[in-house]
Structures are given as C-alpha cells and as structure tokens.
Amino acid sequence: MAKRILITGGLGFIGSYAVDKFHSEGWEVDVVDNKYSNAIDELPEGVNLYECNILDFEFRNHGPYDTILHLASPVGPAGVLKWAGRMGGEIVNDCYWAIEAALHFDAQLVFYSTSEIYGHRDELCFLDEDADKILVGNYKVRNEYAIGKLLSEIIVSNTRQAKPELRYNIIRPFNISGARQQPDGGFVIPRFVRQALAGDPITVFGDGSQVRAFTHVQDIVEGTYEIIESGYENEIWCIGNPLNQCSILEIAQKIVEMTGSDSIIDTVDPKEIYGPMYEEAWDKLPDSSKLRRLTGWYPKWSIDGIIMDAINYWEYIRKKHSFNHLTTPTYPLDLFSEQSEHD
Image (tube, rainbow, N blue to C red):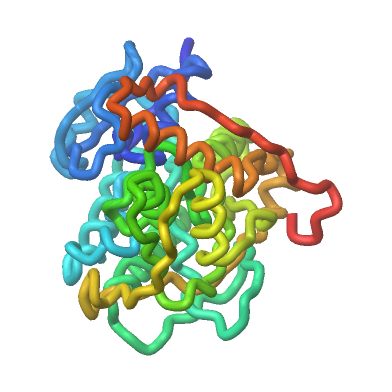
C-alpha cells in the first residue's frame, strides 16, 4: 500500500519540489495551500489540492497520512514585512495545527524551521544543530520570524516530552534557491537574474560583502526525503551546502557574466526600497555533517548550477514559453569534496 503525505504550502517554492519528489516516489500526495504566494499553478495528475488556510482544513475528514510535511509559512527578507506584529502568532498557531494532525493520524511531523533561528554572530562560522541561538537587541520583523520558528521548534520538542506518541523531525534549511523561486519576497538570485535579463541595474544591498552559502531546493528536498525514509525520528537537521560560500557581490558579478548582460551593478540601501523595518540576514554557513553521516546525503548543485537553473527558468518566463514544472532543467554539478572539513 502506498504511503500517504499531506504537504502544507505545496504550491510554494519548496512545496512544489516536495510534491514532485514524493509523487515520483509513489507516495499519495495531498496538498493544502491558500495560494497566497504560490510558485506553481498546477499539480501533477493524481495529487489532490485543497485550497484554503490550513487552520480551516478539516484534516479529520481526510487521510490517513503517514507524514505531515509542514512547509506553509511567511517567507523572505521582504516577504515577511507585511506580517509584522502577527507573524509570530501565524507561525505558532499553524504549528499547533500540524502537531494535532500528526497526533490524530499517528503520522510523523516534519516541521520546516529556518537557519534564521541562530541569530547574530560577530564572526562568520559554521552552524550545526547544537549551536547557540543569539538574539540581537532589536524587535525587527526578522526577529519575529526567527523567534516564531524557534518557539515552534520548542513547542514540538516539548509536546513530544508530554506526549511520547508524537514523532517529529525538524529541518533547518540554509539559503535555498533555484528555478521557480520568485523575487517578491526579496530573494536575491531571482531578483538579480530578472534585472540582468532585462538589462536593468542589479541592485546590491549595502556593499555586497554579505556571505551566503546557497543550496539548491532539490538538494534540500532530497535531504528531507532521506530523513523521512531513514527511520530517524525526534531529531533536528541542518541542510545546506557550505561549498557554495560566496558574497552577494560575487553572485551579482556571476549573473552578469553568465547572462551576458550589460547591466551595471548598483549598491543601494534596502531600507529605501522596503522601509525601516527591513533587516539583512546575518552571515551564516551550514554544517550539514550530521545529515551526511547518518543518511549519506550530500548536496549536488554548485553555485553556478543554481544560478544557471534560475537563468533558464526566467528566460522561459520572459520569452512566454510554456514551463512544465515536472521538467525543470537541472545542472547537478557535484563539486562536493569527500575531504570537506565542514561537510
């Protein structure tokens, strides 16, 4: 009998890849999504879509499910701004709903958290599952998002202590990108690619020295699938590709070169665009050694592959060609070294 999964936010960026992965592996897939920030409009044949807010989804009338994959959430450095003052409640209330659904079906809950929970570091460092969380002294929206996710992690963990029948895994992804990611939330690679293809100035925030280690969404989803299939439970997992470490300015330069664009690179103040509540993400790098050691997972996509995937996607869109989400072009350049100190 096929396994069955309920994916919240399945029309979103990560969710769309998760749907493709589980559907291709023979799982029966149900999706609940309010279409607030969807990356795709159609789902593969055989996948059921329930269009509503997840708190309005009467899960008891559906299922049973083996896994609840909870992805639905406000996202993006700019996308979270519209949720100021209510985002913490949204994240936590949705988490309680996901816990209740998992308990009802005796299903594994897979909760997507964020690397933002680590907060601020004075120096760039690699972060594993046990690294301290450091809240800087402001109450900006980025902190509301991060603390909402961290509180949800704590709620999941403590619910397990009170109700041992709850089974969970918590995912902390680092700097996800790839085809289908939209620029609306403030995501840098699709924004730069669209600007380059249009010949517009590429707007780099600050001096562009911010460090990121981008991970392709397929690598993130593959890691999630490996965790679910591994049998490990009640664990926290960092997923990211430390070998893709680079600065935002270097990303802009790569995109100009790879698109052959005439765009100039402009440095701008993001607060002039998004307002005073905007905050840049703090520099952080993933230590995914636990995931690799226990499941054999490793990231396959280089930074150049990630950028090219985004370029091809936005060229399709720009030229008004039909784009089949099941046949996304891929460039899995495996540059991951067996000897990498930080896995």
